[in-house]
Length: 68
Image (tube, rainbow, N blue to C red; front, side, top):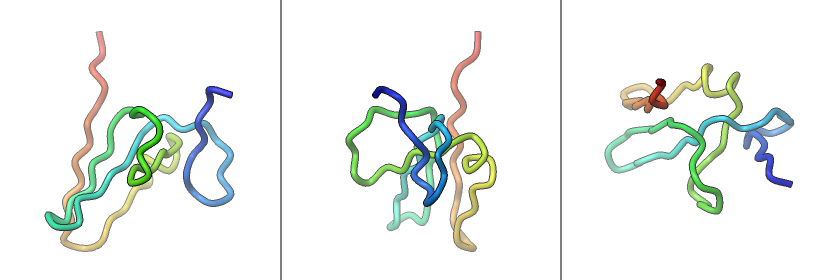
């Protein structure tokens, strides 16, 4: 099974993005689906990636995939 699912509880949609956190800098980075196996990364479906919210005062960096 190559399909990766969203990390959100009870979500069975296919993951399209990977979320990581830098707690020291109070930053969340959301980008294209990264390589699997990182226990500190969270895969999200398109719906959850679009609805991402972080604690007040945190910065969100969204890395968009390059389009041709």
